[in-house]
Image (cartoon, rainbow, N blue to C red):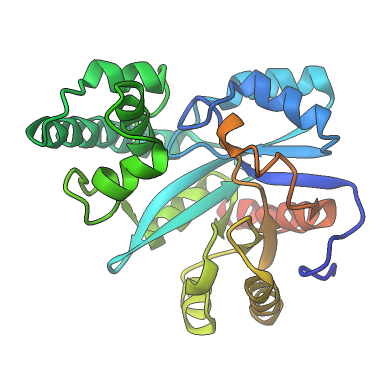
Length: 286
């Protein structure tokens, strides 16, 4: 197994990237073109709570000769903690897509409530402005932040979250989330593996052990938010609990210029081990 703390030799994959189907700045076709330019062997589209970007990404990947991993990033809840789950290597998504209808409706309701709060705070942002920023994608807080920026009410995206939209801030509204166990089960039913995204310091032995008992398949070891201690600890815990490793840039677009696509140098064998794990679930559920 490749040492997670050292940059492995290629070929590389990137198993965490977003498109305009959620809060990314690149279309699915543009993302595939960038993955090709970065000489990635494979790219995963993991949009927030939506699968809508996958058909266009697959067509572009076929044309470019890049392997596309069908994925998603689900917002789930464990007690009072928000846990993001990456579903990777999805094959059968009907049940998952049905559950996401309620999530998408709740996203719009949440954005409308945030707009109303911002209006009471003296900022005449509108839902039309938010939808314009979403451009048909799944509406989320970043689109509200971009609408504030477009209207000149904040200096930048960080200012929008720090002053108004971050957790505990005056215009923040809680969102509908799946229970962690339900999210894991939905990913398995869709034929994929469930990976804890960017756990950072939260990824300790006790929590990973408990999540593994619920069916968690892996942990995102390589992520831009992880320091060397996180990398070493998470890789060791994956080995100890028999979980697969994953990694990706969590790329959202041009604004992430400091975080280029493929920057985490995720080794292709990690993806191969994930596929083996996914096959176990598909066999069990057949």
